[in-house]
Structure formats: C-alpha cells, structure tokens
Amino acid sequence: MMTLEPPRRMVGPAQGSTDAAGWRALGLSKSGLERFVRVAQDSVGLRGEVDVLLADDRTLRRLNREWRGKDKATDVLSFPAAEEMAGIHAGDLAVSLETAARQAVEQGHALRDEVRVLLLHGLLHLAGMDHESDDGEMASREAELRGELRLKTGLIARVEEGKSKDKGFPAKGAKLAKIRHGSGATAKRRGVVA
Figure (cartoon, rainbow, N blue to C red):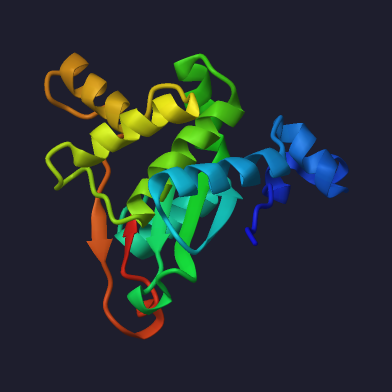
C-alpha cells in the first residue's frame, strides 16, 4: 500500500471535495503515480513499502528545516527507513508540488513528468545512493533509469548543467545533501536526503 494524497491547500475546498476532483485539479492521476512508483521501485531494486507525501512549499520548507537544518523549500526529500525495516518499509518521500510545477514550466514538460523525475530521484536515495559522495554512480543510474522509464532530464543532470552555466555554482535550489540523525524521535530514520 502507498499513501498518496494531494495537499488540500493547493486544490482548494471546492475542487478537493472528492479525491478524484483533487487529483484532476492538479492534472495528476493517483493510480498513475502509484503505478509509476511501483515500476520505478522495481527498476531501482528497492524492496519494501514507500509512502509518498505530495505537499506544498510550506510543508517541504518545514520538513527541510526540521530534518536538515535548512530553512528553505526544496523539491524532494527522502526519508530512508531504519535498517531493521529493510524489505518491509523502504522509507518515505516528500515532494513539493509547487516547486515541481515551477520546475516543470522551466523544463518545458507536464507536472506529471516532473513529479515522476522527483520520485525517481527520491527512490534512488532510498536505495542508498548519494550523488554527493559516490563519484557519479547515482548520476549514471538515474540517467539509465530515466531512459528506461522515458523520463525527461533528471535532477542530477540539471545540477551538473547549472554548474557549467554558472561557472561552478549549482543552479538555484540545486544544493542537495544528506544528513544523519541520532536517537530519540528520529531513531527510525537513518537519514534524510534531498
């Protein structure tokens, strides 16, 4: 089972009065996204349930601040499950639909396509990949899977493109990092990855 729900704040009470209306208002299909996550998860080789939160910038900013210490919105966050949950629960993903919509316009494709790019990126992080420290392994795998899944330019490719255009500086919003958390309320999380 996968939890997918459009943020009520984005679709409004009139449009979001039924589940189907909320998804239509965003131009997305819940069943289509669920199907994509299953196929992409299989392609990545990631076992266990994945829960996906589709939210707004305000929510992603709060999560980013709480889990990564960065007080700004971001496009996708990955929350790997604890190692003892391996094979049962792979982790959670949070995607900002507001940021995804802006990035879709910038990239010249549909919101649906951008959400899929973000989900694939997050799934690779849940599988333990980290583009900041793996000497291009995640970038190669993301490019390979984008081709297989017929997706547009991925996040890592955009960051690399932004660096070359901006003389070594990442494109706006492209800073991606991984942090680890200790015990207590965060003990169930190995880390949060953007």
